[in-house]
Image (cartoon, rainbow, N blue to C red):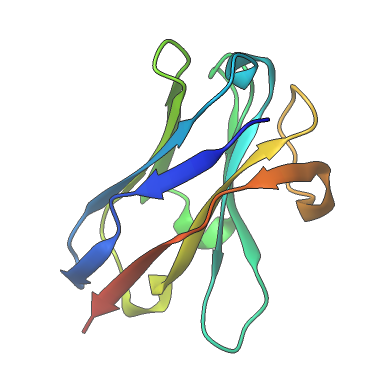
Length: 124
């Protein structure tokens, strides 16, 4: 059974950067696409970024394009989210998730395994 553990969240001022990591257990990490989602207080969970199994195809929600970069290291069973030029509206709990497919997808229901989340707070 795959388990996902996020780390790297914290408090940062607007304009700052954070790098989130998601470490996966299990031998099937490299087979599937991975994604990052976030949920702000009082809001629904939303898609942030996704990366395919090999790491050569990515997709982002419009609000983070040009600021966030998703990447993966299959040798380390880890997916990353580099977040630059952070804004207060990026404040949320960030979750990584493993897709049930190898290709990228933004559909939340196609992600079957989720981490516990890591808090990101951006102060103005």
